[in-house]
Structure formats: structure tokens, C-alpha cells
Length: 183
Image 1 (cartoon, one colour):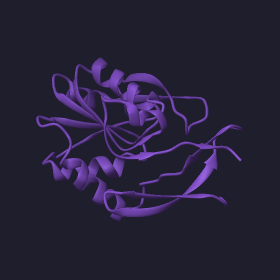
Image 2 (cartoon, rainbow, N blue to C red):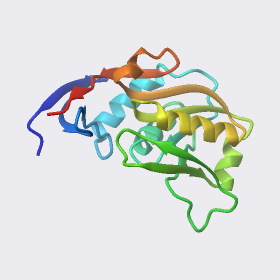
Image 3 (tube, rainbow, N blue to C red):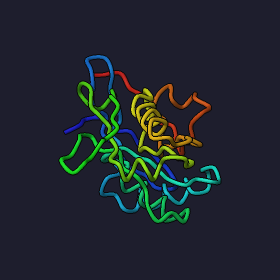
Image 4 (cartoon, rainbow, N blue to C red):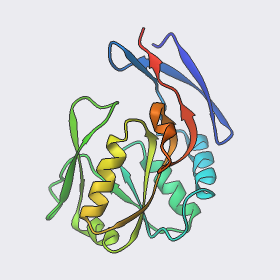
């Protein structure tokens, strides 16, 4: 159990986030939207006001971005959204995949798309959506995947921009999230 917490208010919802070491020098505030209906709903409502017009498809990575993408899709009138999976599944024919390195995941992981999702993206305007953008590795992997599938990325968005990501001018985010020294 964490002994430090960070109070975050995003889209009018306040949460106490545990501060957890990810290396011997770096700690992050653990932000988890998954399962938090109030938080997802509020963030999607606010994000719907900020995303660019002309989105044809929302692309997110498995797992924590899924409820956010689902709620945002409803709010902007999309009937579907696409999830980049973290592994190739047996039912996937001719999958596209890219490598992804994230601050919260040990080692490399993969993000992949199946044929029907590739067709949903091909030739369409894509919004990349994640829960948190920190180092930018996961959002870059999503961008590479969308472009390999023939999509046009017209926006990159997250509920939170962590650390230096908050200085980027190419992403849309709702709140900043600081990084912390490990203890």
C-alpha cells in the first residue's frame, strides 16, 4: 500500500492517486480510469468539447483506454471505436503490429490490429486516445499503427499529460500530472 498520494482533479472529479516507484529514481501517481464510471464519463464529456471535428474513428490501446474511447465515441456520435490489442490473437488474419515501450509496462510490448479494424482505419481520419501520455511511446506506437493501416491521424488525446508531455503542443489533454522522485 502506498504511503504517498497525489490529489488530482480532472473534469471536475477528484481522486487521491497513490504515488508508486517505477524505478529507483522515478515515481508516478497511479491513475486508473478502468472501472471508474464517474471519472470516465466526466473525462469523455470534457474531451468531446476539445477534439477536432471530422473524426471518423477513435483508436486506443488495450486496456485502460477502452472505457474512455467507448464513452467518447458515444458522445461524438461514433458507432464504433478501434482497440489496438497487446498480442496477436488466433482469429487475426494478416495483422499489423508495432512495438511499444511504456513507462508503466516492463519491457517491450506489441500493439496490433486485425483486418476488419485495418479497414475501419484505412483512408479515414483517426483520433488517437489514451488515458495518460507520459514519455509518448504508446501514443507514437498508435500513430505508427494508424499510419501503417492507411489512416490520417488528425489528433492525439489523453485525459492526462504526465511530466514533460504537458509541454507538448501536438496533444490534447485535460490536466497535467507531475512526476515524482522515488522514495
